[in-house]
Image (cartoon, rainbow, N blue to C red; front, side):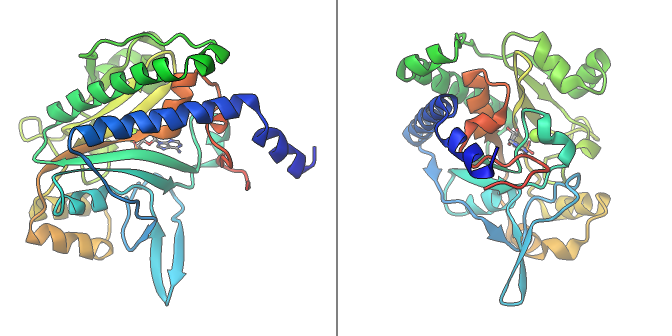
Length: 308
Ligand code: AMP
Ligand code: MG
């Protein structure tokens, strides 16, 4: 098939059209929920001298402007922390570019360009953010069940009314019970969303907060979808004290100079905070019950491929 015919087929696909409609309603519901609770939406940062290190992503997206190097946003984590200077509770529909390994082309869950519903709150604890996540998730699902009946029928999707609190399992328990492939195994074994908590420090980036009562482990969490759909969101409490951040960056073997600007803010005093990033395409995939995340947006970019 000619490339243009492939794109035209996609642009006219009933499946993609309906999935994007559901997505648009999901975004509307999430915005309504958050703004009604006092959250302020900020516009996304696409390029910056600093972005999430995500050390397992080997390739850095970079562009040069006026002789300076900008990183293409892999996540807005640092900007979220800094933006709490201006507002106590912020969210953003943040486009991220991550050059995922080509092996993830057929995972059904990975794109190299995707959007996070990314939020962060001053002085919040993980517990508060978990509860917020449960309310946000159940609210958007119930709204879409009302507003997208025709689309959900098209997909043959009967969504359950999940009842918070969702079960929790620690990383260590998950690893013991399910082995290295714990994320998918856990996702396949549950019929409701599950919180995976307390990741070890070496499994995550330097900005999630180390648990003072449980050194070596973080005050963080992932939400895992049921039915094998895998990870929905990641979040946690954040390190905000200059000395601790420096220690964590050094422990990762990352050059401190790369984070100069962020460290200057930390020196002046960042707020303690917690938050999460919720993948919008993955949420759409789950709600519509789709195999392939590529069906959740126009111009989807799969790892390893070159597309419009
Ligand atoms: P992370 O902080 O890396 O966990 O990313 C936050 C959320 O963004 C994840 O929980 C996913 O929902 C979503 N996400 C991360 N990477 C991708 C990807 N390559 N494609 C689509 N969604 C992603
Ligand atoms: Mg994650």
